[in-house]
Each structure stands twice: as structure tokens, then as C-alpha cells.
Amino acid sequence: MSSWAPTKYKTRNWPSYNAALKQRGSLSIWFDPEMIWEPPPCGTRGRQQRFSDSAIQTCLTLKVLFGMPLRQTTGSEQSLLRLVGLDWTVPDYSTLCRRQKTLNVSLPYQVGTGPLNLLIDSTGIKAEGEGE
Image (cartoon, rainbow, N blue to C red; front, side):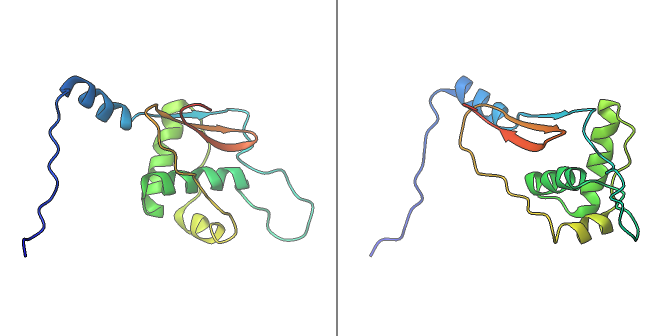
């Protein structure tokens, strides 16, 4: 009985292969400055939430998208907001941990050759890929 040998593929078109690998890492993140980051008072007794559901959803989406722990997620979110010039405060990791139990983050798997666009606006988060 012969042993199993892995299949070997030979790349013949290096320029297109290299371009495809580079485009696989393309990601655009768009922040809408009109997004409600801090929720309005709800009018009930007790402590009000400091961050809206869409703010928590934004952080948790980046966590799922890049496979980061919560502390790294807060750091990357801070740097992203600083890069786009928004002076919003970022939820700390304990707030994210507590609120992720009630919010559902799902990113549908998309196979495509185009870049992934992550739109964050006042209506929430939408991941758009090729053909959308």
C-alpha cells in the first residue's frame, strides 16, 4: 500500500497570482461622523449606557473580523478612530465582554476577488463585498 502524497500545484502566472494575494488583504473601513456613538438618555431609572449598541457592534465586528482578543480590539478601535479624526471614546474590554452576551455579531462568509468594504453609519454596520 502506498503512502499518501500531497497534491502539488505549480503557479504559472506569477503577476496575477501576486496581484490576487495583495488584493485579498484589501479592506476599507468607513466611519460616518453622524453615527450615534453615545446613546440618548432612555428616561428609565438606573445608570445610563455610555455606548450605543452600534458602537459595541462596531468593536465586536472588528474583533470577529480580525480574530483579536477584546483588549487588542479596544486598542485597534482607538487607533482607527484617531486615524479618521473622531474624538469618540472607545469602550473598554470589560464593557465589550459584558455587552457581547446580548449582541449578535455575524459576518456572512463571502468568496470574491474584490476588496471587502466595512461601512459603519447611523443605521449600523454592513459588510459589502463584490457584487453588492
